[in-house]
Structure formats: C-alpha cells, structure tokens
Picture: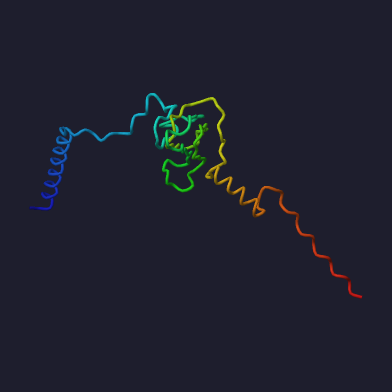
Amino acid sequence: MSSKTSIVAAAALAVVSWGASAAIAAADPTPAPPGPAAPNAAGPKTSIDSDGVFIVGKDIAPGTYATAGPTDGHRCYWRRMNDPDPHAKNNVIDSALTAKPQVVLIDPTDKAFKTSGCQPWHVTDAAPDSTGPGPNISPQARAAMAILGGLGGLGGGPAPAPAPAPAAPAPAP
C-alpha cells in the first residue's frame, strides 16, 4: 500500500469511527451527570431543630437566634465558625457550653454555625448574650487571657512609665 493510500484509508477510518461514536453517544440511555444543586426555593431556614453544622446563607439565614437552653440531661453547645469544617484551625468566632437559655447573633460573614444538645433555635428580636469577642477567640479564652494578663501585668491597666534616664556623668575637674 502506498503512503498516499494509507493516509486516505486512515482518514476514512477516522471519519467512520467518529460517526459511529456519535451515533452510539446519541443512543446512550445513561443520563447526564447531575449539574450543580438547585438552590433551595424557600431560601435558608430561620430555625434550627437538630444538632449539626449549618452553613450560613445556605442552610440557615444570618440573624439573632434564641434557644431555651439544653435538652434534658445535656449541656447546650454552640459555635460560630469561620470555616464549615468544625476541625479547621482558627475557625471559632464565638462559642459557649451552657445550661442556660442562649441568644446568639450569627453574622452574614460567619461561614457556619454548630449546635449540639440545645433545644430548637429560632430567630428572635432579643439582644444577643454576647456580641462576640472577635475573630478566632472564644469568650472562655478571652476571660482566661484577661486573668493571666492581670497576673502577669500584661493587660488591664496603662503601660508602665519608662524608667528615668541615667544621670549624666559629672564634668572632669
């Protein structure tokens, strides 16, 4: 077979193969893989009825939420998070473990909210128990730092005055 005939035969085979694969693909009864999930038509919920991690803006709406406290025999634990992964480093914005009713502000910038052992949470107009100590530090950690800072002279008061300058040496006679 000449090289020209080989090239023409290879091209014809490629065209026939392409046509056959297109026909098989068109006849394939396998459904297409699912695309992105359709958004929740009702929008994020404004109540939390179970333990879990809830994505802010997707699972739950940001806002101020209240719970009557822990379920029987438990402590109510909640955590506002920077990251939906509860095990991620530096993801705690604010948290508490308590036996009392709670009111928590979940900001639109929070990534997730975790709750465990609490009665249902519902949106409320009540003032939050805590406005949050700031990024990545829990109220318990802030209190411990204040205590330690006070013991070590590292916080809680004004900075100490600078030491006086040493006296100038006396002039030589």
